[in-house]
Figure 1: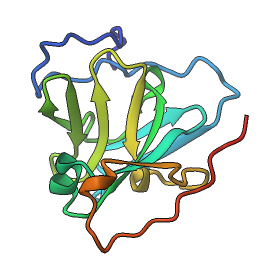
Figure 2: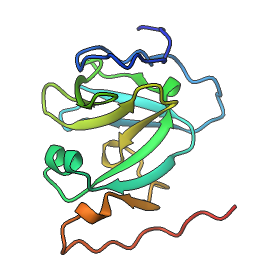
Figure 3: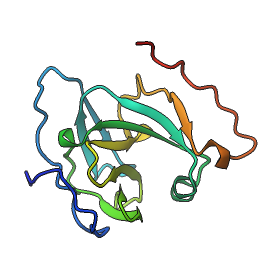
Figure 4: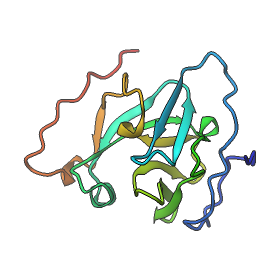
Length: 157
């Protein structure tokens, strides 16, 4: 398993592997697991879910074939690929953003922006989906006109 730095270059190609395969530093932080449809590409993330939101951008709707994708953030350095398939295959949808999917079944699993400290995982790839109710909806203007969503209340400080 690679332990290279999670810092990413802006000149990445879609096939370059994700360097974040270390271990979580806080043993008391919650651990979550997730996997693709066929189970060959699975992962573990550590920490509290961050920024759960729906996205209806043209990339998400095209990739998913649905009206939106639920994204949930976790620290990039907590991501560990645990399945027999290893890392997903990568596809760059923007010059500085790439998405990982299972090369066997095609399940879309993660999104990573260059230089980000967070990796976004697809909410429904998580085994435990508690506490990931979307608080926002990005690119709402692109959502299907029949799509009406009641979002979770915003957290109070």
